[in-house]
Length: 286
Image (tube, rainbow, N blue to C red; front, side, top):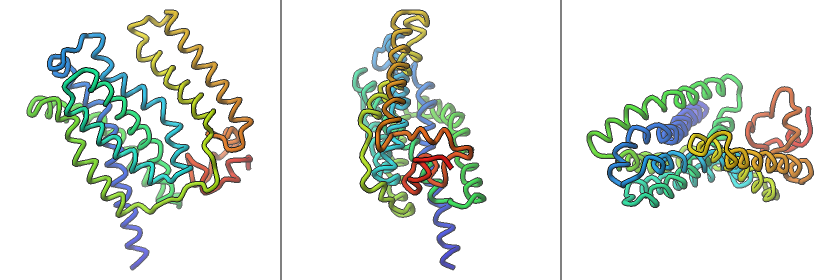
């Protein structure tokens, strides 16, 4: 009876995780439909309007790796909850925005929260389903939610914008975020993280800056020109910082991303994206 109850509980926990991730995935497409209304209401120019999208992409892409490592260090559930809170509060700020600057800034914070949620969600699923059969089914559900989220976002964005106004494409995240937060506290077990481990500050700074510069160069490439000095310069600096990151990771005691993972033929063990449950496997190849 107890085993059956625990099994049901973890599947409910999976659905809650998927709901949180769905909220993040929806936000990547739901905004596109509302862009004309946002432009008219807040007076965006054609060139500045793209930053409603780009601000989100910039922080989302830049903080993915750092978000995963912070989950390893301080606990995946704790970081997932922090990401949900940050994303929900930023959604409220987006929904209440009355100026271009406020909306773009809130979108950047949304991207940060979304990056943290996305980075640790898979680790939480791996911890909930350590056996191969259950993990395969759980990953199938997760993959379906991520794939379907983009299409749902387009439909939901059009419906909310036409019936209630563009503000509601963000405000709809509030009840979802609160529900996910409450259910996560009830269903997902706490995780202490890696005791005694320190954050690789140098690696975190170089890889986060490298990713953000690369994302900025790509999203701004059409406007600045793909062969322009700005685009090529940003990409060059990004590559240099990435090389510096790899150098740091090869020498630091507690790396942000252990390079030995690339020598593992079968990949890391059950902790998946983190090394908190099998530090030895992350330090040396099998």
